[in-house]
Image (cartoon, rainbow over all chains, first blue to last red; front, side, top):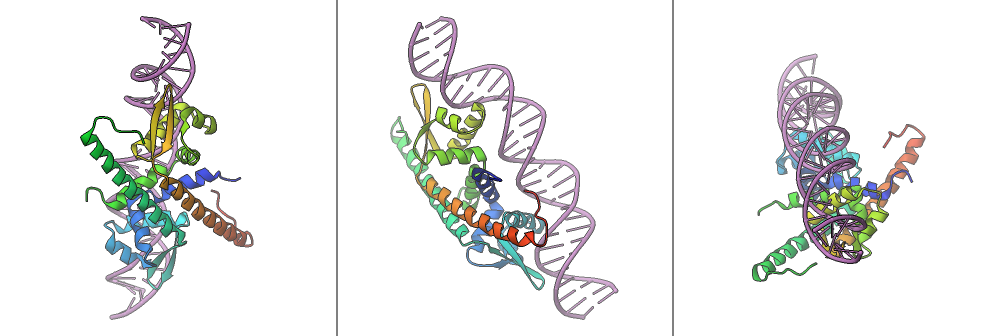
Length: 114
Length: 114
DNA sequence: TTGCGACTTGAAGAATTCTGCAATTATCGA
DNA sequence: TCGATAATTGCAGAATTCTTCAAGTCGCAA
């Protein structure tokens, strides 16, 4: 084994762990998009966006192709979209769960353990 | 909106982006486990494991309960297991894809070190 | 109370990542 | 060719995260 799976997984998640990169992945779920487009929708400087795109590219999560003077990015696997959905589900649950916990705490003294 | 969703997502993924934390989550998928157990299976110092457990706890991904003198950790949502499966699927695809790429490169160029 | 095992916390230096600026490459049109 | 636009790269300082050590808490039993 060259690299333990858990380490590859950690690197993968770390790659996703940046607001700009997340926004890029969300936008690319609707289909390939030129950098110009991403730049118009994400509040970030061009060089910074390029840096974040490079991170995603190096990780193999997105691919880029040149079309004339514009560069178009796309998700390299549709599974990425599924992962984002799973993450959204978890986050929603967690936010709801924490809301409920807060509500319980408002009424009683002792929250029950998970 | 207190915190943009994409930022919450990024934080969530960043929380997962550490080898020890990944291993903890993998182990907890089989059910709750005492710290002692985790310590026996993961190669890491006790204080370091505690730090990583604290990160997961603060993020609300795991919960801890004390049972006598031992502390037991558990996943706070079964969805986490589903997320890990999705990640594994993507990684497997990507590794296979890169394996093919490597095979192609073997005839022409030299792959760069990891 | 004292001592011990299990676990956590605080803090500091090391290592990594992020951001913005300047410079660079690539393409297109005048 | 020159100039403009699109995008990337290199780099340095700022910010964040990691790792380790020392010290601390908690429960239990002598």
